[in-house]
Image (cartoon, rainbow, N blue to C red; front, side, top):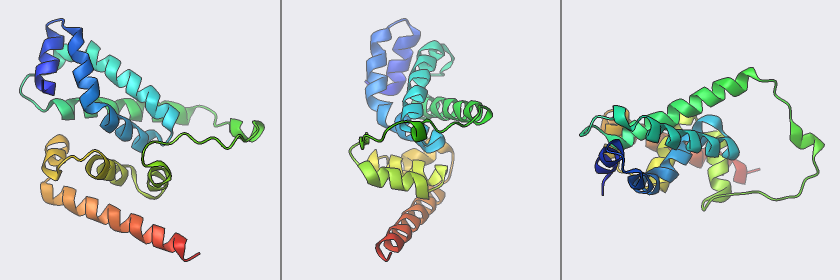
Length: 173
């Protein structure tokens, strides 16, 4: 079942279709959130609110439009909202008061993902994660973002070159 069909089924009250939506989009939603909030725990919070909003607002989805882009836009908006809210709060570094246990939770790409997150801009990180990690085609991303395919390709290649330069600079140290 594709995302368009799953959202249509949710509109008709079939919440079992939600599992299909989640399975098909969970990693991309996580990386989109992570690219904005730059924190794994916060990205997971964004994922939860994103999928709650997908369920809550499924009735506003128009069949035949880009379901993936609709879900990703919700994720990005949720991440931006959380980032804005967090920027208003006082920034307290709790880690300086806690003992270091040396435990780092990583995904399949581990430290490289964390490094890319630090080096690349939000847009660059999102493109690299969607293309290199999730396997989306550039034309699919162009459709989701409204950018021309050439622009997506150019920005992706520029992000990879930037990441490569930074990694080579680290090796020389």
